[in-house]
Length: 122
Length: 112
Image (cartoon, rainbow over all chains, first blue to last red; front, top):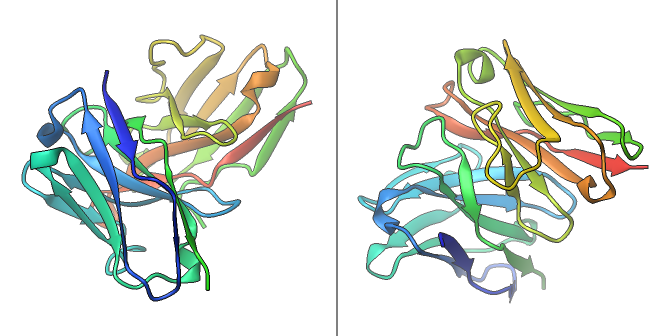
């Protein structure tokens, strides 16, 4: 079974750093793109960026470029989303999702991780 | 504000048919990029509902269907059931800023 399992909920203070993870299993991790999607409280889905673990090619949404860093460690089938300095406005659920096929363009996302709730509060 | 525009909410009684629109532009849906739909039940992760405009993954009831024309796409749900109450999102790509993923703003479906 193809599966993405994300790390657990986090509670952080403004200014702190954070790295959340998304571990893939049941498929060739290096051959499919993994994207990150934000859902702020009461809001819709926002695409943040995507990475191809095979060569770490990464693309960011213009809205998130410079705000977060997406990376992957193919030796342990895990993708990451990290912040160097969190803000209260980063409070959200973050989902990882795999492209259905190895192509990036014109693809859809399936499956999705279960989501990681990040709460940033002083 | 999303580049893919969806109505914030739709509603219908059990058994009825509802449609959710997803309106884009010449740089995304109108450029020929496919549209995909996701269902997000309360407290759960999004689930793929329709891929490549009008295809259902295994396990998705045939009450759900998708279509695309010009710069817009639609999701139709027939025989509405209480368990269909959820948020629905369309997704496509946009070539205006280097081929990026786009999500619609989402539509809350209420089953009356």
